[in-house]
Image (cartoon, rainbow over all chains, first blue to last red; front, side, top):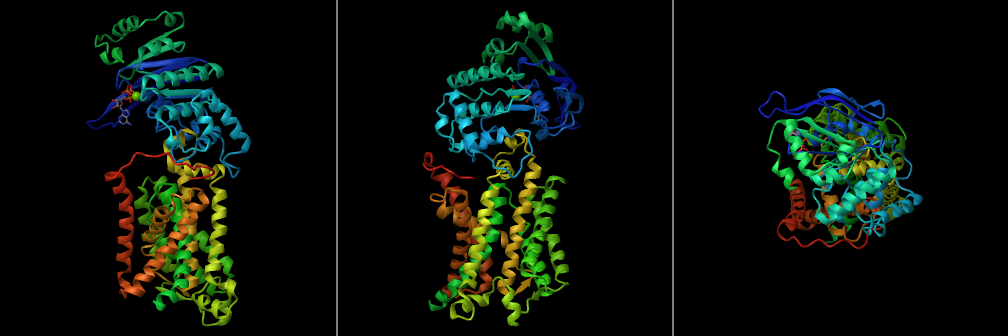
Length: 264
Length: 320
Ligand SMILES: Nc1ncnc2c1ncn2[C@@H]1O[C@H](COP(=O)(O)OP(=O)(O)OP(=O)(O)O)[C@@H](O)[C@H]1O
Ligand SMILES: [Mg+2]
């Protein structure tokens, strides 16, 4: 479903701030793969997701989604294939617009915007039903401005919106990191449900090793702009946090074993 | 005082005309979150195109349509400078505005001011609005419905209806999303560059149309007529917001608030000039002060007197 071939990205080339954030990353995801991504701060996880989403062009390499080469497509054109949830709860929704308007925008992802109504009555009923699944009481607040919602509510809504039109690929960038533990668990649970229901091909970045192990059928760990570990199948099912740290040390030859990673 | 009272209908008429421009400013400043300075130039463009075409015998509506299109073209230029050439929006607007000075002069045959021959009754009768109708409609020399307040009022009502519909469509919603959160908009497949260009086109079209109306009202177009228009537009937007934001939740009412804001602005200015006996040359300073103060109030309120935010009660059926 996703085929990333040897992509590179260097920020601020030729300056003192030069930083190679992606150093030849290749990754192939099969249909329905749910891949968790871990790695220390600055390892290049967000950069990988942004490269796939087309936030900026990569320096070299190629990216295709569902057989379509999207390497040269701008962000808004790739949106046709991709649903996204960001780390910052403010990023994924339009605060000054209503809940139902946000959902209507998401329902039209990847389609030409015309002079047809921005939202119809049938849609409203449909959205109300969908919001009930979240169990956050949002179904009674369809016309509330999204800016009035809590971070967790916004994040759950963004998740729902990302999956409203079944995406070929779902990209989640630490989408529970800004939430309190209880809300984070709730959003993560909703994520699992939505991904399972539609068999969504998913890349989910997390700082929580346990989450990375529990969720998904495959786990990759990034280190200095490369994929340092790639664990799937039975191997992944048996994985423990201690295992993971040991294997990370072996793979990178570093025993920094990331205290931050361990703690979070 | 009687001087002020008798000046009221005229002030309200002018306010309504500038209100059309202010609605254009609302689209860029409030909906798209862009401060577009093109308007100081495109306002005059509307008047220039109108005065030349109308004087050469073109139908009043066709001349206004041409003014609208010319303004839209100016907006397109700013939009392309911003999105294709990557020039910051403010600077892009300033560049277009500067260039438009020459363009406007060229349209007006290199004359700084061109008059409509309104001394001829027949010509005057073909105009949509005129200063002369303000009195004429009241003393019976023209039918009452030709009063500028009625004509421009209707014009504004139709305009608001069209914009209300437009911003409720998929396309209009994509403009609002672009202004509200461009990251989100792109993630939902909206071409934010295109949306910004569309908004600038729409906005400057209205600004230019307003220029064409004012040209008719004054019976002439002057090369400096649009100078400071952006400030008047902002003043109207802000006055409308400060006074009505609690009651006018619906998008159409928000646009109405902008128009009323422009009327209030003009009445206040007229009052200051008539009652205070202020030299008209201080008008620009006064306008700048008014806008500066109204922009400061919400900022200081948030900074020094922040209260816990109460969720608003009525949220139904709004666009923006
Ligand atoms: N737009 C940008 N401009 C310049 N440098 C950037 C940009 N985005 C990322 N970087 C740099 O690239 C490197 C990788 O960043 P990235 O955001 O991908 O890390 P990450 O793995 O997501 O880390 P974190 O866990 O902290 O989110 C970092 O050194 C970062 O400073
Ligand atoms: Mg990151």
